[in-house]
Image 1: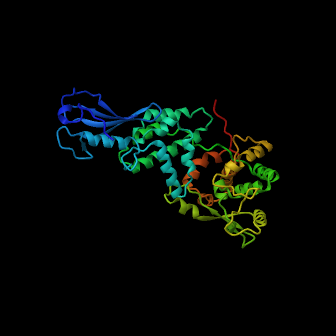
Image 2 (image 1 turned 135 degrees about the vertical axis):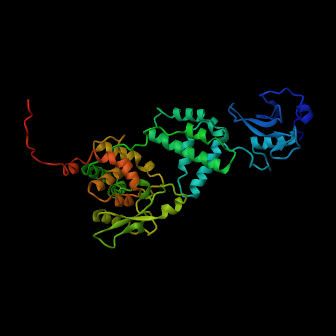
Image 3 (image 1 turned 180 degrees about the vertical axis):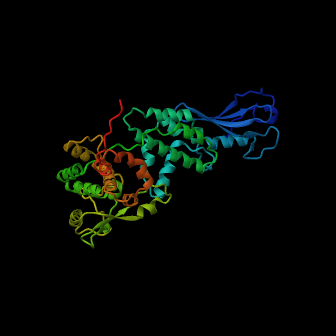
Length: 413
């Protein structure tokens, strides 16, 4: 198939006759793809311009033209080499190497999802943010993203029904996907634009004050059992262990340890949090967490006849709670919370974890032990729970007050 020709661009002699200007001279190579030549005082440069399919254009510099020196790909290209590189860069071509084509945001999210799977993470971190991106942004090459358009997208999420903390989670996922793309392609040099445009919303990551007193925790667990025995057992485990719902859903029958009936425990799977590259290895680790004999008896009764490697906690229909358990209990929990007179907009299953951590701290359990048993760090606890404890530690604090009868001295008039 003949290649597009241009008598003004094909040779260095012809290009020297062009007027020096900032705007490139363009030659259409294919629908939506054009080769550009910028005439400079010195050697000119080749560039490619493409469309994202939605009317938005992108442009990328390719290399120097062979105006003053012989062609030496990939840094110095002649007219024909520049055409070939431009086409490869602008689109996937049959039987052609795809290494030179700029990766799009959509493809960056795909690679991020695969990377998460390989490391034992949740691919939802990639698919979740995709739902909130426009087709234009998804089709745009990562290397062409600017701070302004990223910030405009971030700001468009505000006021749309998402909590600020949820927006920050989306921003974090997109930053991670784009950072991975940049590590794989050294041509992506817009780190500052990504940092500025995807800056987290301020004060959005503060946990809400959802510390429940013991009587409300017990009422919630009782109501959960009344609503659905399987859900009740799941909520009971969350209330007593303070585990994340995703950790509890991964418990196996073998994780129930009742060799000593007076001090039963669960071998709680760790979460994938903490920045570890080996998420799968971390999630395979277990931490012994004590439970009450009453809960142990309930669990022992529930797992009769199950294999050691079967899930410990199941839904009423026998299915696992899954990797995203909240999708299976969210509506029921809202109904249960509202039924005991609490606000379902504020009180979620995570309130049981917050309450467990604060309860342990108020009962003088060493912070290091609290951190280990709840699979977190002392730094995180001090940062996120210190301010919450003050609202719930009145009785404990009063124990340290000075009680005395000072001698009253009349002031001179």
